[in-house]
Image (cartoon, rainbow, N blue to C red; front, side, top):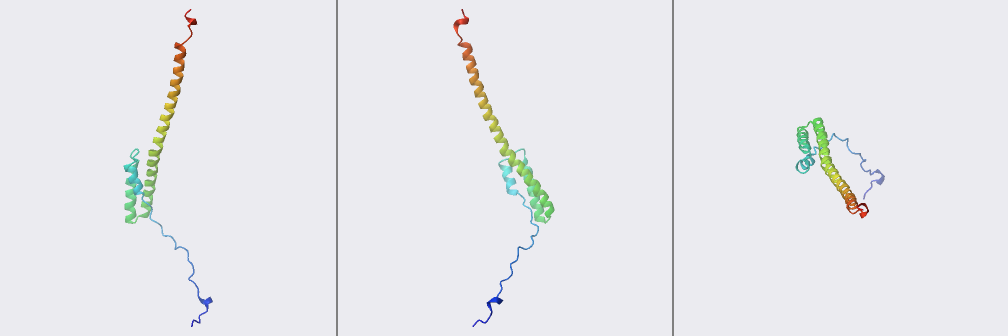
Length: 126
């Protein structure tokens, strides 16, 4: 027979997460490889790849501060390469569309102008 008092039974106290140790920074290597292979705008993807490899090397060697520095540069160049590779084709497409629209309106106006000039009334001939 159990003679223990249920009030004496206590759960272990809840503890928060242990103090976080400084995490190793991300090296953004996969993003840099993607930018290098598929969207290499002005070789920024290759530069990002170089910094990502440097960040990974520093992370493996244990130099967290240098790894964080190179990781930040890799992220910056990756963002620039991605933005340049997405924004510039969209801008070029928008310029082509507006140019085609402008040229079509200009062609319609010129057709109207020339049909008016050549199909004038015969009053001028008399």
